Amino acid sequence: MGVTQAVSETLEGKYKLKSLKLSTIAISSVVLVEVILGLLAGSLAVVSDGLHALFDALTTLMLFIVTRESLKPPDEEHMYGHEKFEPIGGLVGGIALIGVALLILYEAISKIVHNQAINTEMEYVGFVAIGFTFCIDFFRVGIFSRARASESSTMKAGLYHAVADLSSTVIALIGFGLATLGISVGDALASVVLSVILSFLSARLVWSSGMELSDRIPKEVADKVRKEILGISGVCKCEDLKIRKTGNKAFVRATLQVPDYLGLEEAHELTSEIEANIKKALGNADVTIHTEPYETEMPTEKLVEKLATEVDGVKEAHEINTAYTDGKLYITLHVYVDPKLSVEESHEITERIENRIRTRITNLENVAVHVEPFSSKKRRGSMVDKNEIAKVVYDMLENRQRTFHVKRIMTYVVGKKRYVNIDCCFTHEISVEEAHNIASLIEEQIRQHFLETMVTVHIEPS
Image (cartoon, rainbow, N blue to C red; front, side, top):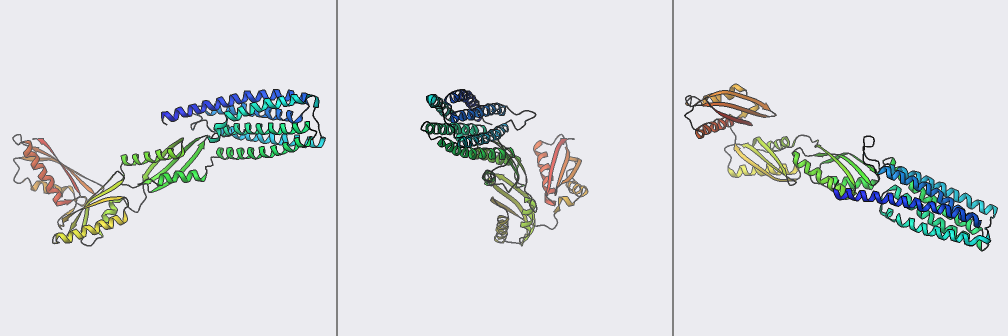
């Protein structure tokens, strides 16, 4: 996480807590004013709005406590952090709002049935209460306005509460105004409309909070992540993609299959690019990418060998190397052909090899084929034993016994390559340059006799 992002999240958290704290204090004052003045005015609409405010005061207080918990850093018991407390708050707050909507509906039906009237002698008190509530409602809507662009469930719940309160106050004003004109049923009908709107908003909040708690991810989010992953050159396949959201933070885990020719550094660069792109697409995200070799019919070098040897005229392919850099693949290989072929004929063979490789391997920048004359005497180093290699070395000693002698020959096979390490002891009179020339000659002689052999001659004094 960058410093700028951390600072932004800290400021966002402080804003949430401040908004909820101020909202709790403000709505609590509405409860006292509307219930007391509503009773004096004999207005059920004003008292009902006060009871609505009481529910909101309790719910907002709960949201404040939940949000404070959600801002705590990860610990041993909550390794993903405490952000899940936010959708819990949204879920509880949404359910509370549904209860408020049903309460308003019940009160509206009761007013219609009993045809209740207000105290006309104290009607101005009701207007004072409603006016005060309007001021508080506009204040709360203002401090929650940032929730429009926020993914915070608690901030959305706070905004919905504030809007619902403002609507409820409008309904109370209409109902109280009609009641002062002698039309008491207008208050009840307006309350029914409010309860329906409030129920719809609350149901949406409960649904979204519940889906977040169940780790449901919108399909468009998953598609966006897959697009960012598979859009990077070098990624063959994306498996085991897992995404979860806690609050406004997303956790992304994925396993990628990449070509076997990618080295550790190249694979790291590729995953770093993917992580950066996902964070840019989702915003606040924690991304972990695991890479593994792509499951193909055979390794890349083995495939190159197969493709090359299938070309007419190629006796054998060896010393195959792959290099991946800057998003491009480079391949070099040596092939044996009939020594009697002309240069033009051997060139045609190399072109056919290159074309076959390009049709099977993607992301290929260059193929370099080195042609060598085939000798039936040559065999693979992995197919010979230590004695055959020792014979080649000792045959070279016939005219140089006084110059050096072989102390030890160690040989082993890794994969399909034979490794030969030779310790040679030279006389004190011989110079380093002469010793190096003899060692190089030994290495070259062995390589001429055996294919795919790595030879190292160690020089030391007698």
